[in-house]
Image (cartoon, rainbow, N blue to C red; front, top):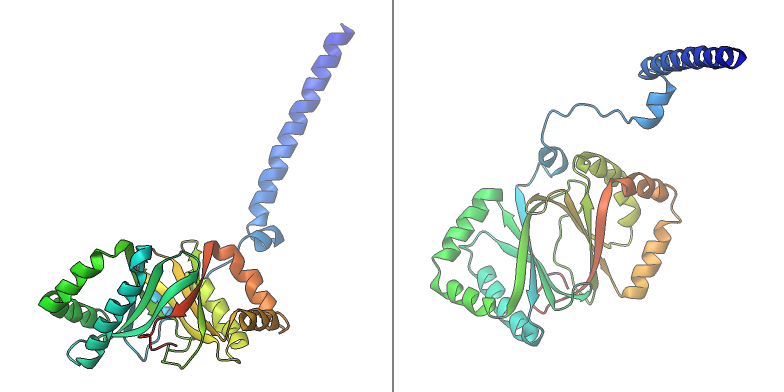
Length: 277
């Protein structure tokens, strides 16, 4: 009898404890929607009224960029560079094509035997469409593509816009090495990335190493490419280390790292035909 009473008493106590815990949890949950708990873990974002491509890109230009990654057969890299450079020079001499190569490189550290080309189309998508139509009707260019295809293992490309707060990439003399840092962001974070880097870029423009900043529109999405120029690898090390001595740079890193899914760094050497030397 005593045992039965004890079990019954414990059961009533457990029931009352469960009810009280449920009520307390519900009350806390409801109150926390407007309380300190919510403010700690939820970042309020104002509703956007436009696409991030319009909010982050330069309003005064209609530049569209294309980046190409060509993985070349190792034994063909020299011939590939020569052929690609010849075609680029011809396109630049012919004013009928609304495109220009911004820079051409071979990857030094990163994916080996790789060529990277950055093209600019002044006039946006209409200029791109016009250029492709003209090239596809150019028999000499079509023969070039056939010859080039024999040298390639794979290729891919992306269409990009430039961030409004970066410099427009312009030809520069060398010798330089270039670093392309590619960030693969979590979907929905591009605006936050842009807001942080709009403030942070000032820490990296003093030594003229900031060449250009771009974000993808077609191809792999939520991808950012930052392009930097350095005299050599030692200069790169010293320049990057000096950024950490500037108050505010660490804050940018703190807030942008959680936005990244993965990232990649390429050290690249400009080809002879590249306007960025």
